[in-house]
Length: 210
Image (cartoon, rainbow, N blue to C red; front, side):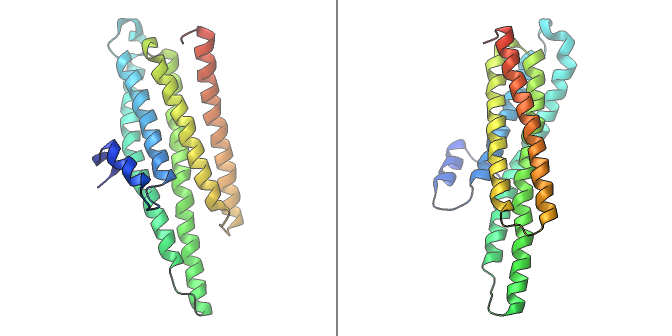
């Protein structure tokens, strides 16, 4: 059963348990899904309003994109839990002989790549969402601008969660070339996320919308 099929309370209780999953990565995916939901809501509250008729087509596109993004984030939450479990299983492999040690190390490194790639995917989703949040902030229903700002704040939080999960696993990755790739790409995503976030904040302040 996916996280979209349980209540908020059930998910929070799962997070609160002594089990290591769902952990920060899955929570980050849920946070990002909430950001997508709020962005979609602002677009929905814009559609059909005479004052914003010029932007109706764009808002409909945002709604469609956020619907798809939410589904992808539910899957990321599951993948995050699966990646952690795969790494833990690899750690349990025997290491009595040199051959066993080699196999165990290879399995751990393979699982580690998954544990990095999933939060990296979350970081990209946070970037994608906040770009749409920027659009609905500028052109959407101003009565819902506080919801747009809330979405931006959640995107920033989801990105920071994703970044933390990328970097905590990068420490153990032996492939230096791949490590450098993830570091550079995550840094670039950070610039994009904070670029949109700062523009949203400045836009709201300059126009006195809040």
